Amino acid sequence: MPDSHPQPPHSSSSSSGSPGSSSGSSGSPSSPGSGSASAAGSSSKSGSGSSSGSGEASAAGPSGSPGPAEPGVLLLCGARLSDGRTVDVRLGGGRIEAVGTAGSLAGSSTGDGTRACGARVDLDGYLLLPAPAEPHSHADTALSADGSGPVSCGPEDVQRRATEAALLQLGHGATVSRAHVRVGDVQELGALAAVLQARRSLRGLTELTTVAMPRLLTGVAGADGLAMLRDAMKMGASVVGGCPDLDPDPTGYAETVLELASEHGCPVDLHTDAADPARLSRLAAMAGGLRPGVTLGPCGGLGRLPAPAAARVADQLAAAGVTVVCLPQGGCGSAERRGTAPLRLLRSAGVRVAAGSGALRDVANPVGRGDPLEAAYLLASRHGLRPEDAYDAVSASARAVLGLPEVRVEAGFPAELLAVRGDRLAGALSLSYSRIVVHRGRVVARTSAVREYCDSAAAPELGLPRQGRGEGP
Image (tube, rainbow, N blue to C red):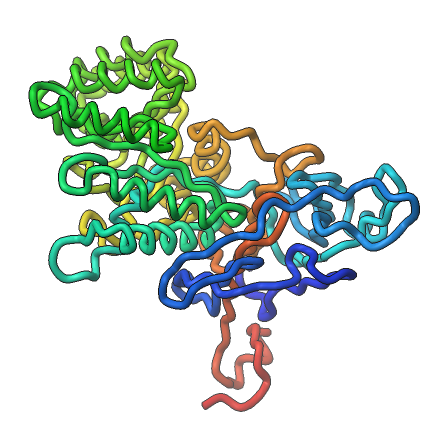
């Protein structure tokens, strides 16, 4: 049963300083019902939410004789895979070095004869999965719903919120996040600069990429927006974005974005409700062949179109290679209406569909959690996707949106992993509070949940899990 085990996973190390052997507070809130959450291997300023990672784990180097493991070696012991196997997984140099049956890698040797028994993490009772990725977040407005008055756009406030939001999502399992950031208007480039600073402070702990979002790009008013967008790309934004629906000339807005992305050789990620099939057809025609690619979201309006019109648009998006990112947990401030895209229609047409979080406790969704497993749960429970397809939307497909390499629990693949309490994916999506997150081959976050029941005559008979054996209050 997911999360029924009373003890958190145990880790040990044969040499000091190995990954997974130290931990510090992340400052991010834990999931409901969870006992604690921490970001391992990081330092955090109390109350500020800012954190800096210690860098990428290094691979074990050649040595003339067997000796202590290099800092980059980590052994995950007794993990269950989605195919039912129980395995040990050895990580090094930010990648998966080996996968073997449980117990087979303990004390094994690397190719040069050195011992590979560094830090160990006991994953008995855990399901090991490729880590999720967050393809749609709003770092500049995250965690602002509880404030009184207008949301502060001050650099320090934006950086603090962006850092705390990234750590919260890391605790949920997402080791990389794409953040849409508004540029122009009152904030000009200040919010983007703050999010980029948060990205630098989090390096080695999690990855944060940015999408520059101007409000207007056409007409006289759009000239300033275009200039600001160009400056944003020079500053370090890696994706051109925005919301054509809010511009007086949506098609002209999209054309400008696509042209600028072509100049810079970068991806496009646009907000749209997708309620106008003619406009979507024109966008698909313009986007066809653009590399690294075009993403649209949340596209809730597609679900309100007549079935034949929606099917035609889906075919056009598939032919153009456009990806759709839906937001099953709720909308975001840049989408006019809420609703989830018709997932099965898009998938059957051949459109890649990923799922993101959207608003994270801001005015657009004051209760947004930013949890990719919750997004997958909603795709399965509300929209009829198989658990495997639902998890793919927040992992493999989400990574593809971000242009990242595929992750499998196999030798040679990136060590971007999530261990969740449970033995099957469906159970993990239903009830998975306890989580261990691995980024670049080291444990970077843990969330441990403990479930206890009060003393009862039925407890011994039912075998209810308990951590403490003393008398209840």
